[in-house]
Length: 123
Image 1 (cartoon, helix red, strand yellow):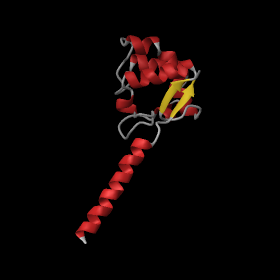
Image 2: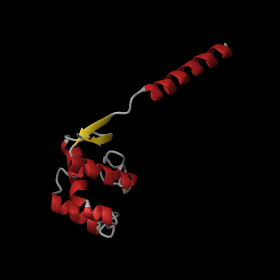
Image 3: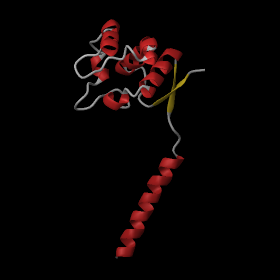
Image 4: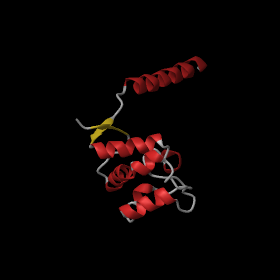
């Protein structure tokens, strides 16, 4: 009986592992500005607080909801100057120089025009 349970567990685990390895990684093509914003979001570790897709957590804001009510100028002010637990990023050259692209990416996620997950630059 124990051998049968072990065999079933091993088969199930192998199926999960092989399925994960064989499954292709999904990536969506997007315009240059959105792609740049996506890269800034990932490289500057925005996901540490706001999650991999911008949906936040119990302790940090959901950016997708925030950008439904927050305009571009206010977004820039919050990111560059900071607010509450959000530190200022004006000294971070990549964020400061790419703030418009970062906004484009997060706004697209908020509007539903940019999918969650990996993105690639459209040809």
